[in-house]
Amino acid sequence: MNYTSDMEKAMQQSHGIGYQEYSQKLENRLAVERRREQEYQQSQMMLSEVDRMIHR
Image: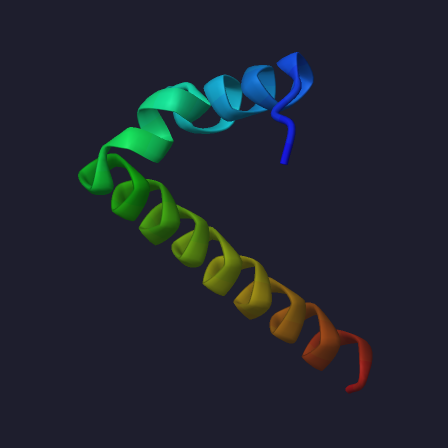
């Protein structure tokens, strides 16, 4: 996969590290993936709450 400058910019903005650092260090990769999972879980909880409010 070719990694573009836009992808690098998004990685820096979202996670504070570049793709090279992300791919080279397992600790960084795990931290980013934990944060992504946590954000996903929070968004699912919010969607569930909104869904409950709509279907009352």
